[in-house]
Image (cartoon, rainbow, N blue to C red; front, side, top):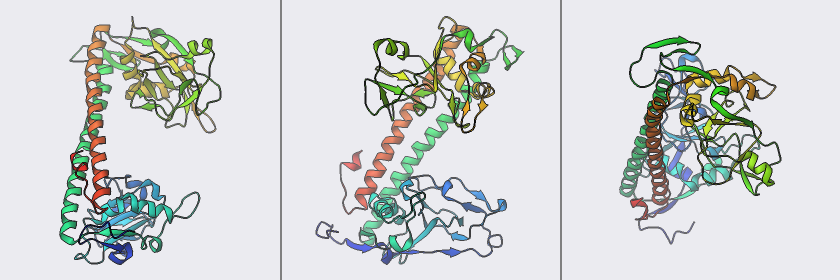
Amino acid sequence: MNTQSLKPGWKIVKFGDVVKNANLVERDPEANGVERIVGLEHIDPENLHIRRWSAFADGTSFTRKFVPGQTLFGKRRAYQRKVAYAEFKGICSGDILTFEAKDKGVLLPELLPFICQSDAFFDWALGTSAGSLSPRTNWAALQGFEFPLPPLDEQMRIAEILWTADETFNQHQQSKINLLSVKRTLLNRLTVRGIGQHLTQLTRLGEIPAHWRLATVKDITSICQYGLSIPLNESGQYPILRMMNYDDGRIIANDLKYVDLDDADFNSFKLHKSDILFNRTNSADLVGKVGIFDLDGDFVFASYLIRLRADQKKILPDFLNYYLNSDLGQRRLLAYATPGVSQTNISAGSLKKVLVPLPPIEEQKQIVKVLNDLELRKHFQRSHVAKAKKCLVALLNNLVGAKIDEEVLHL
């Protein structure tokens, strides 16, 4: 590493010279008040805070102890970028290394998790990993990682900046989670009970307003069509949407494949705005996804999707999409699922039988407006989360890399 580019007072150190792998063993968890068990699955990628854990009372074979102030690092599949800062004591998986500063007068413990989150550290961890199916790095290899270390007072300043950026990111993230929860609650309430108080009637769907009626998907759609069953390519005339192009009730254009079609086939399978795509076959936990198409451009859809087109004299496409994404709508869809050897299927014939509560069109418009407004707020909040994350990552890789980019500070 080039030392000539270092800021004054900074020095290049080896990870193992300033950090130790605590590797403590908890002999008597119950007597020592240990209640939380942390596995790799409990650490979220690129998030320093542990929000989930198992209870010691549920049993565990883990014995590795961690305490507040240590940094936890997932050594298995390091590309998942799992690093956490311990804010409580517990026991963790053997695939988690427990780091702490050898000398707090040399390395600030609060800076250590950000060093482990840096691109340079992960590149080293990946480069030293071995194994094909479940690659692992190890402490012996990680000790050799070299990085620039500032004086202690500058470490304090950097750690303060990074923890403030982390707090901002987590506040935006929590706001997004809260908004998604509100949306889910209203989605379930409004698509079945409507806005305000109404007299109700008992139906095969349960209680719905007395002035609503029941219909089937067949009654309220003009098209129920399987997609194209042809080979997909990395390039071609038309992007084709597949089972991974869903995002919370919307169709998104990510990870696209392409197909070449003659005019007749293209016109038969071209998607129109407000078409609804239903994922008819997948693993049991993914089959039944529903999303509305509102993308610009020419798109077609693959054979394991079904296109629905709402009869807008009877039902608004957004209302149908919201209902099919509600808890009740999903239960009604999955009631028709037939398990296969590796995949679960719901046929177009079964999809047509799914019951749908049908308010008057004007009431549908009111419900859709409320849910669309929440959708817009969710979009803005996602933007805030993405910007906060970009700022945090940029700050992290600049500040622990011995420089401060003033432009980054204004992201």
